[in-house]
Image 1 (cartoon, one colour):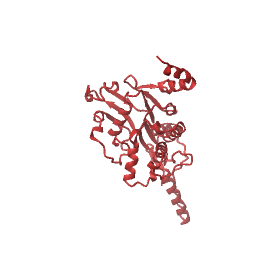
Image 2 (image 1 turned 135 degrees about the horizontal axis):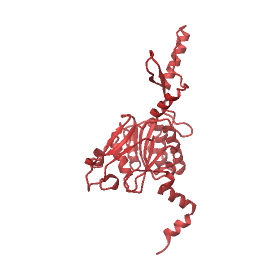
Image 3 (image 1 turned 180 degrees about the vertical axis):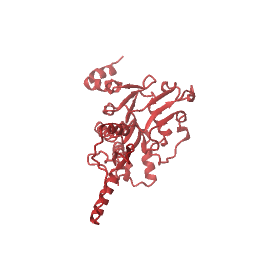
Image 4 (image 1 turned 180 degrees about the horizontal axis):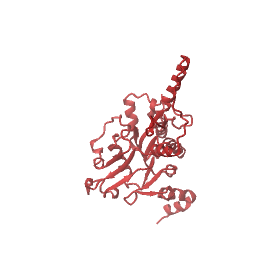
Length: 318
């Protein structure tokens, strides 16, 4: 049974310990050892010793330090995103048809994803949610949200023309994951109820028996582990304190390359995640920005510092 940690952050996912071993004088061979394999090996060693065996069992050491060159290679491998490229070829664009009438999709693009967490920010109607929904569907997720094994009924009209038009490039294809669509999350919770879920993967409590924000955090804390997670405005149901909890979860899962996140957001709190890339799509192109240079941050900070100035401007009679 999956359990969250007392502080609300997700439990540790099994670590992959990468180690190079020389075999027969050949070039180093990459080996992958998990925590489970390490534990099983230790158990076998104890059993052999109790049986009087004099042939020691060599177990992978989770604390091993790799040599500097190998450590750099392993680090770069562990931090590579699963989904590495999103492209819209020129011959797939259908002018005067939605969403190709939006500036972002009116011309071809090839976006390279080289961060484990990428935030897409922009004004309402800029196309960030449309993009993530199409990427999620193209990657095999249901348009209403959920994992690949969740087969909710969906309207054929819900499949955007952008879906077949996109081309995705993968470093590791077929990883697990989840698509969160904030506006249809209630439907997903209902789907789990109708399927007779015991909700062990969500903390053991029905999502419908929790508030909107609590159910979101149960999903983030208990269900998110390794894989690709596409989140459309996850802050929609979260208080500022709960957004900080989500920030810690994003940091925890992405730091060692366990999980990749593509997130459409308006939240300056989430955008502040260290090491994440923030892409502004205002103006119809992908532009890397510092979160402090976004309109979201500037307006929020300006209002909190001098609310009377904003209120005076908003409520001044003509």
